[in-house]
Length: 390
Image (tube, rainbow, N blue to C red; front, side, top):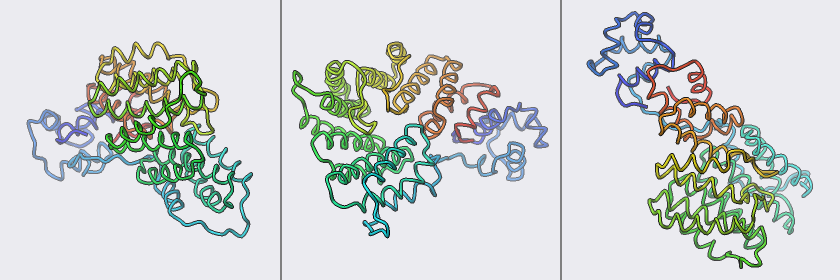
């Protein structure tokens, strides 16, 4: 959000689809005053005048006077807070002991909710799933279910920006891992939370160390080994490119490409979507690197190779949608606002709850709004749907 009242006034007026003349009339002020405020010729404003403008624009007066905004997860805290509480709670003895079959069924339902981006419903069911899986007797099957439940918690908590709780779930998943590959998949998830929290060096170090530990013998590598090792390389590369270490980022992508070529197709080698890996995933990551490096032409070239791809059976849509945000950003950087907005619309139509949860998507649309003198009704509707701050 702009940091001066003139810019804030102009941006909010555009969002409301009003001209300066219409705003002045609604606020019972002169067009000259509105124009001078927006152009920065008049910087001081009486509280009464700010109130008139805010009332005409249907925003709080303080929204005009103080423009700072903070990102708030779109999922209500009353939904995700019980999940965090359940993770911290010690195991309890229940009147009716849960069964592994019952927990397995609930876990499958939770995965389906996450794949459909139904985060509100998932947040409401997770506390009971966490309670039940912790109450299971200590068997090999129960340990596997605890591992899988924590993987689902990591994915959910990352979406609602509860990184500390997601890191806790990642450590629990790692503790419950039954073998090196399970551990590697848990680390892939853990590194994703470190990246989201800005802990780039920690993510790079952890991913690289585990990649070295699980590196397969290529001539005899199984698909699950290639998928986990390749996923760790992608996390190492993501940390390096964000930390302005392009050489290390390129090396990690090259190794991930080797794993993808060995697979030859997109696969999900475990029950959790975090083991979704293959040539398309690597291409999308190459495009993400190009987007971070401000190379929109390369983003669009890479997109041509994967534009018609859909996730592997059982996989979520988040990887493809995240790639499309890079494509929308590339079109915007090449001054094609219409195509950028069209792509954002397509993502919203396909995965509305996912898109609303993405700060990146909001930032892209905010840049479109800032560049345009007026907004179409379609753009205003999309901005409201994506909860772009006024």
